[in-house]
Image (cartoon, rainbow, N blue to C red; front, side, top):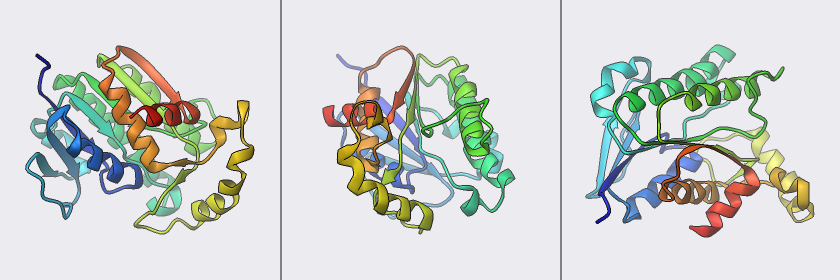
Length: 223
């Protein structure tokens, strides 16, 4: 008999996180879905538990961060965050603290959205932070770590990101020309990323798995 599991998602108000939360709530894999965020979402489901936390004091909420599978969709931009320091706090500090706490609390899987080009040795600040985050997460004692590196994300955002909207208008018509080695650079729907994350979790693999954007698309198609 398959063990009844619960899922914890952080960043459910975001583009990928919103799609993922909907999928988790419908999944027979999970009897309970815990959504962790700064504010309550306007959702009521019998299997949804919402936990409001102050991410700057995440360790104080360790008792609330207990789950089998942890899905982290936290992420911002330097422009939205307001400074490099604020960006680092969201995309590195919050994510790595979540990994530390949930690993200590016995979570078996940690699935996190990173970015294409993540590299701890990169000269580009954004890519460097993402790479350092990945490095830290990989070192935690989870049975499995899945790192997702999507290309340009497509989908309707609540907040306006002018640069990404402009890029998507340019890149989307060119997607059909991106084949072979270029396929991992194709824009990808946020919903596809969410489907790929849930499918990867359902495989109950062990070890560290890094998923470039074309592989995420393949996983999403299997959901």
